[in-house]
Image (cartoon, rainbow, N blue to C red; front, side, top):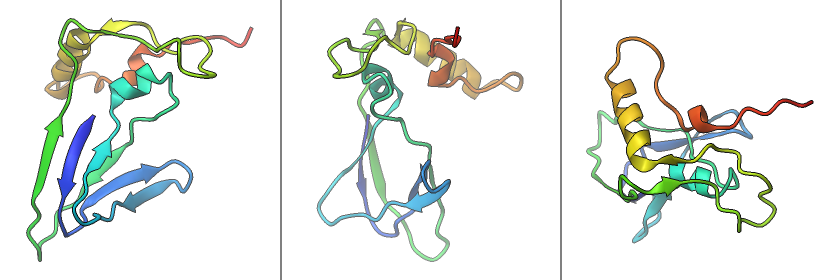
Length: 128
């Protein structure tokens, strides 16, 4: 999860799958915005989705944002929780946070291949 204290101008945008476009996140006074990350998506077995998001620059007004990243330990086993109501079978192969970070970091600085996403751990099931 990422906890954000957002100030004006409202530069954070999240992608709405329903509207198929980015929507501005309007900051509420004296509040925090919590960005549910990839690990919450796995733990909840896709009940909660890690949002596609971006931050836009503003040439006219300075922005101040303080992100705080809350991550598990590198040895933490990441897997869907069986106690999620209605979750059914796990949608993801278990992995460690360290494995995820190592692969994501390598993909961030690679000139070849593709960026590592949480979907890389999603179990592919056939409809047979």
